[in-house]
Length: 563
Image 1 (tube, rainbow, N blue to C red):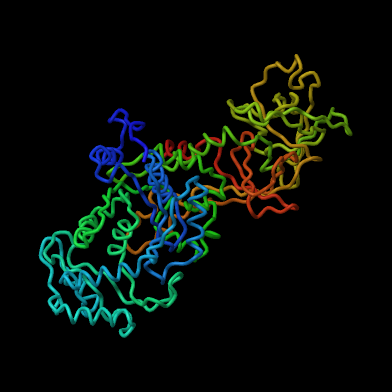
Image 2: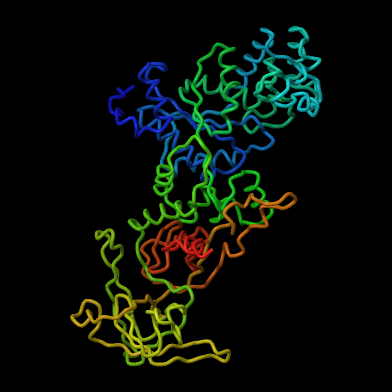
């Protein structure tokens, strides 16, 4: 283990978790080791809240020269699947982290059973045949003692026999449970004789049909930490009330005792984090899949074009807190904009095209214009963009009767076509419905970008693509999945689904530059003046499909000010 001298710093810069760890390092409590773990249950796909926990657990260990295990809390075979295990490992690796060891709670089923037998022999656990609804009722309320089970004081021998019968499959699901004998008058409800094992005749994705009893989370978690030599069990705030039970099991089994430290879970507005609700969105078809780019899942963010660096920076920026708070979704978008601004190659695309004809430009002529690939990174160089008589521009870049501060195209006004020439709009053609179908312009040859006359001042610059050289593409414009900051804030009898944003996905047929360097899935680009986009996995050689990662500006902030 490295010396911890390299982490000595201004104590005011330490968060409360780091402060506790440094105190343990100074005291030598764990032999100056820092071992953490990330322990997901494989019953769904990870979301951005898990990403914060991943970054915290792996980041803490890295900072102090320690290690982090990944351990799957697979104690409920009814809800768990190998599909989720594989997706979780992919997400952790994509975020840029590598675990020291891979474990499963099921690796320890034999040891957990032996420890349960030990507690029974010591009179600290008993088999209870009371129906589950009665057990729950008899726990009572925090302000009054609960009611002890009639089976609480049965003999050790009878408990051992009953527990073995549970293990051997001699009872049906729900017939009885194994409970710890602690304190039915404790103000902490988790200490009122918690259930350690329940009967569940279900095939496990790793152990098959070997077991028909499975340990509860509270009995498996701390002991698994202990077996792996974890020093600091970092978990979210809802487990704070579980900590006395975590400690009780470690103390009464006389095993290595990690320190549990709780932090506030991540809450982001305009989304939901409940696995149950995310599963409902998928199963009921409100989204296409777990990796739908509107989902807060890590795989959804990845498909949308988010980078590992942007998510890690988001986690670092929000830090860790002891109290629950809500993070603005705009901060997550800011982090990905900052990262993509440095990395994404620029290109031009027109999402709502209207034809622009330069009447005085030679019919058969094509010029290649120099366009900067990324002004933030000169090493990316320039690309050649074909320019001709017939172009596409954004319909929103023209107004027939513009307001005073409209600096784009209108009749009689001049604008610059980016990387090319200054043009003057002369006239328009309209279709039978009165919609503008063609815009006619005059160009000024001496104003080509880079020429002396190119310094001629105009107030507006717009982008374009050549009609004869562009590619057609499907562009999916994703927005926030919910239209209100707190989708869960609904009256009794109503559903969070009522707050789904009807405009969370719009699909348009766009015209894009033909000079793409990389057309593989997740290749990222900035569509100039529009936002950041990536190539979706649905793309084919015949048809490009893009996902909008984020717009160039935060339109939601402007909307919030108006409200």
